[in-house]
Length: 148
Image (tube, rainbow, N blue to C red; front, side):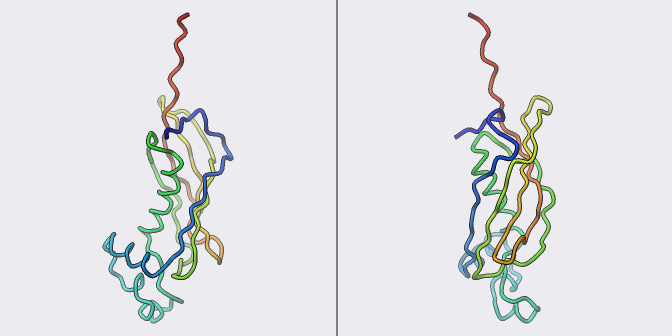
C-alpha cells in the first residue's frame, strides 16, 4: 500500500502497536542487536543493579517506534529523522508497552511531502519513552494532465 502526502491530515492517529514484553521477546531482541548486557535477559542480575526486573533495551524500543511508523507510511515512504527519543522509565518483562503516534505537522520541502509524527511509548506506569518525533517523507500525487 502506498500512502500519499496529500491524504495525510494533522491530528490523524496512527494505529497503535502493543508489545507484550515476554522473556522470550527480550532475549531475542537483546541477541539480535548484540546487546549482551545481562540487565536485558537476566532477572536476577537486573535486580542486583537496582531494577525491578529485566527490561527492554534501547534498540528494541527504537524498533518499536519504527514499526509503528513504517506500517503507516507504507512502501513508498522513508524515515528521515528520529528526535526526542528519551528513556523515562524501564519497560519491564511481564508488562505491555504500546506505541502511540499522531501526525503533528506536514509541509512540502524541496518538492517532497514531509510529515512529522509525534510518538511515545506507554506501559502500565505511563509514558516510558519520548515523547519524540519521527520525520518521514511520503510520495506526492503527480499532478493530473491538463490536456483535454
